[in-house]
Every structure is written in C-alpha cells, then in structure tokens.
Length: 120
Ligand SMILES: [Zn+2]
Image 1: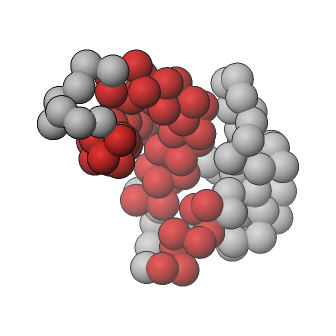
Image 2: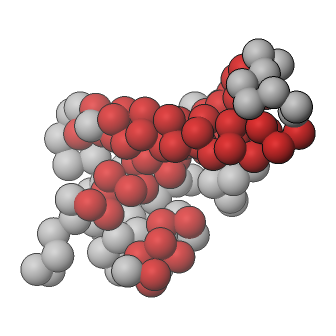
Image 3: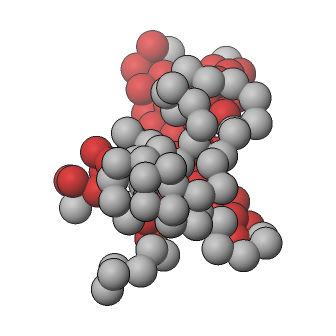
C-alpha cells in the first residue's frame, strides 16, 4: 500500500509504474488544468477508460478538499486565541485555492489506482 502511495505521488502508470499519467514534470507545482497522457508511453495502458471516467474523481477531489480544510483549521486554530476565529476562514480558502490544481491531479491518480485491474 505504501508502494502505491509513492507511485501515485510520483505520477506513475498504475500498470507498469514506468510511464507517466500526466504529461508534466511534477504534479505538485503545476497550475492550470492537467495535461493527461491518453496512454501510458511504456505499456500503452489507457488511462481514461471511457468518456466521463474521471467524473467520479470529483468525489475524491471533494473528499481531499474537505480533509485539507479540516487539517488547515486544526493547524490554524493554534495561532488564534478564540476557538473559532473568523479569520481562519480566509486562510482555509487560500489553502484550498492553492491546492486545487494539485487535488485535480491527485484525485485522478487515486481514481486510476482504485479502479485499475489488479488481476493483470
Ligand atoms: Zn504503463
């Protein structure tokens, strides 16, 4: 499992772990809409199995965003006197916007890894 996480963060093909899913150097510091390879350059695994395949990844993305918001709140609250200071909200908003592009990539990678054919 820890293997899979390393490969996900490495943007590796779920099938052969040699090709790349996104046609980008890093999934961490890239902004704008992700450029995805259609097939793995190494094993020709098709990433988008059918049109709308990544629709479900939006739910993963939502889950990530909620988790990050809670984590941000958890960290930010230590810097404020009151338990729920309203100034935390813009901080959370900033973090979400900063991570949005990364989350699109991460959620799609997670989605591919969740539904890859493990028998192959
Ligand atoms: Zn591959």
